[in-house]
Each structure stands twice: as C-alpha cells, then as structure tokens.
Length: 422
Image 1: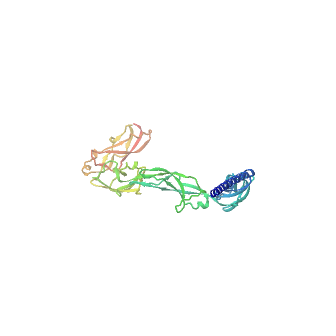
Image 2 (image 1 turned 60 degrees about the horizontal axis):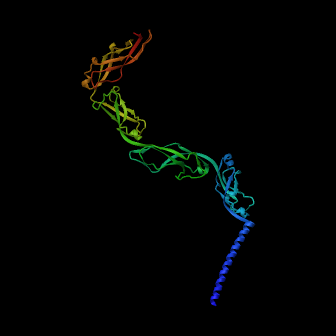
Image 3 (image 1 turned 135 degrees about the horizontal axis):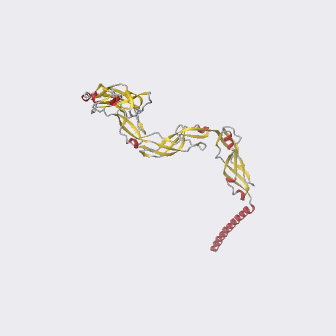
C-alpha cells in the first residue's frame, strides 16, 4: 500500500513539471504572436550619434576663425516608435547638427543641437541639448627645423659637419593659442649606427615646445611632414705646412725658411683628405728676394678641405746663409737682340747693371764676358713708315754652368721700333 502511494506522488510531480513547461512555451508563443502580429510601440536608445558642425567654412573663410573643439562630440538619443522600425535603427539613421554660422569672434560657445530622426519615430529624450564649441583666430607661423640624431656613433678620426636640410623651415597653421606653444620644429634622424662617411636620411617633422615636449594637436597642420637630411661626415688630419721655390736655387744650406706655425688641422671628405700629405703656404721666387725678409702669406686650402684651426695667414721668414750679393755691369748691343722679323729698332741703353747672389766661390768667378743677355723681339710688330713705338722688352740672362749664382730682380730694356720691317 505504501509503495503505491509513493508511486502516485512521484507521478504527480512529473505531470506538474510537464504542465509548467507547456504553459511556458504557450506563453512564449503568445508573446511572439503579440509582438509580431500586433507590432506594439517600442523605445530604443541609440548611443553615440555624432554631432556635425555645419557652416564651418563660413566663419573660417569670412572671419579668419578656426574651430578646434566640438568636432568629436556625440549625443545619445532615445526614440519611440513601432518595434519593427525602432529595433533596427543605428546612429547612422539619426542626424545631429549644430550651426556655427552666427559666430564672429574667438571664444567658447554653447550651440543648440538639432536632431533629425526617421519618420514615424518620436524623440523621447536626449543626453545633451547643446554642444560646446571652442573658436580661435586662425594663424600661420614659420619655425626653424632642427636635427636630432638617435644612435649616431662617429668613428675615431672623423667629425660630424652641420646637417644640410632639404627645407630649413616649416609653415604651421592652426589656432593661435596652440601656435603660441611652439618653439621650433624637429626632425629625428633614424638610427645611423657607426659611420665613417657622409649619409643621407629622411625623417618626420615634429613640433616642439620650449621645454622640449612634442606639440601634438589635430588642429595644427604643417606645410611639410618629412625632410631630407644630408649629414656630412669628415675625416680629420694634421698635415705639415710647406713652401716651394720657383727656380730651385734655395736649399737647406743657403737659406733658412721659418713659418710661425708648422702644421694645420684639416678635415673633409675621406677620399680628398687621404690624398693630402701637406698644405702649400706659398711659392717663393728667389729672384725677387733681395735680402733677408719676412711677409704674411694667405693660407688657401684645396677645394673640399676645411681649416679646423681657423688660421687664415702664415708668417714666412727668409734668412740667407752662406751666400753673398754682387753687382756688375754687362754690355747690351745688337748681338743680344733676337729679331726674326727684321724690325728696324734702336736700343735705349748699351749696358745693364745686374745684382747677383750666390756662393762666394762661384759668384766671383762670374764676369760680364761670360754672361749672355737676350732681348727677344719675336712677339713685336713693325710700325708704319714715319712712325715709331717704344716697347719695354724683358732681358733673359744666362750664366756659366753654376748651381748657386742667379740674378736678383727682373730686367728690361726699352726698344724703339721705327719704320716697317727692314
């Protein structure tokens, strides 16, 4: 009897669960039917509807103003309408606008937000009725571009020159309040590593404030965003300063040449610097130096070579040793004249006073008879009959075989050419 009662109780509970499940399914079916068949009124909140600022061109062009706040504002809108219409709406189906056309000067403004919603829907509520808009004067400034290097290592024996930029300045446009923060522009040259020669790189331009911080603002624009950077890398070298002699009469035994500095530090492209083993200060013409003297020579470096010491002049001192000067007179006559055109001429003098220098042992072996003077008229033309012209012709001197004796100075003879070719 007890077993039967227990079985009946268990069966009753099972039937109750089935009944409840059937009721739930029927209720759900009924709800779906009502929602689909009856299509009741429904409310839906659409979030993040962007607020569009309209007539911005009017104030930016006509008034020279610039809007820099309010562009990213949004509004949440709750709409009521039939469920089958409301449930499928997105932010793209709603238009929110704020008109800026009445703004005429810089400042902060609260503008009304107008909503346009789909037909057959009503606005129940909105998260905001106004939008905050910030307006400033639109200005333009020009700032210098500086270079900054990352990871650049200059090898020993090389130095870094001043960078050459494809553009040295950048024009920046934006609200005046943000432009006032800008101190300069900067291009970061990417990691170049170890360098032993000039390099070219490209880098992006950033705007920097007085504290070195980057000025990043979506309302500020630049005329250039990238710049080409040529970074010269120079080889360094110390080389001796030297002099040369035009005629080869000077040597270490008969003259002492002193320079007020012996070397100079130079730099330049490695291909150029490696071929330089000295810098020539001056070429000395011994025949133009009568006595011991000193003078200042301009220091001129080859193309592509930079003077690292800043020296522009070198003092040169010349002191003769072991040589003497001697004066003598030599005859001048027709035998000295070279006249291939047969010009009619007259010499203005019959002798010439010379000053010689050389080793005394050789100097005093020289006599007027073994000095040859040549007066060459090859490059001169005749004149018309009855006319004459006087020209100054250089005298070329030749001495007996000697390595040390030479004339001091340059000598000329006046020659009068008269008549045509004889």
